[in-house]
Length: 315
Image 1: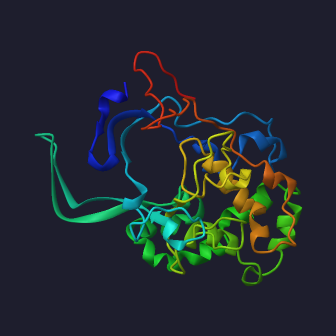
Image 2 (image 1 turned 60 degrees about the vertical axis):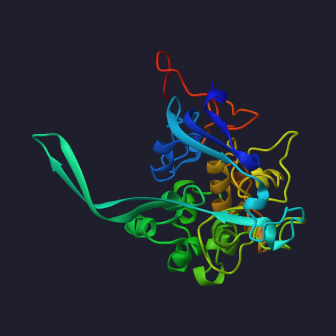
Image 3 (image 1 turned 30 degrees about the vertical axis):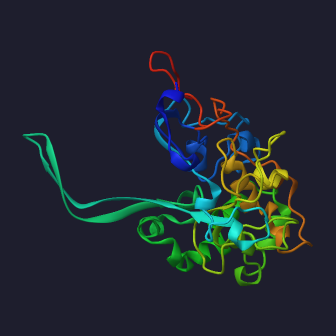
């Protein structure tokens, strides 16, 4: 079914437009209920029996535009990326959505007229930044701003609210993180998160890897194009699973973004900047307990077949 919607273009390019299954999986009810994670509810401040996660996007389809282009059209100098340590091998991308400033609704006619200049109302680089890192009072301002201006939000990366909530919600579960956070924020900044989320990981922290885009703090999804795809036993935990081809080096369809970001915030990546720090054992297993309900395709456009309308279900 996907093949009929794929168009082959000159220069090795391909484009797909059509319905696909919603490949992002997340327990929205748990994540947005103060980070209440169902698989760890037995360890919660107000404990209840542990349970499987509930995938809020299960059974839904999305309109998808997928592109496949040669790597040489993405690198800054037009070269074929072969050296992972070459800065030219790294790209950073983000997307925005805009609407016209004014909308006029006419109830009697049921018509809606839009007018005025286009205004940016949302953006996306790394997944879940606005949802997990940026506090409620600044979400709209973050959505309306440009990545190049993200230094204004630096404090929320250096001392994310969720890492402090974990200690309250799961008392005694993260003793090493608690000891770290016992010091003043200025003395233990989360520069590991800054590297992962705002600048890219510089050379020297992970052997044979970097996706550093420069000193400008900017929310972008970064990808080292010289890192080949992992074709045998790829890890859905990406770099945390010793798979350099996965998130946060780009984001593959099957990467468990929620688990990776939860574990990073819980301190699993802090040894990148302080090798003396020992992450808590819970940080290595933290997850919301969800998984994609449709497997990805092995070929372009990669995202799984859409759910049928006659028989489907949601969690």
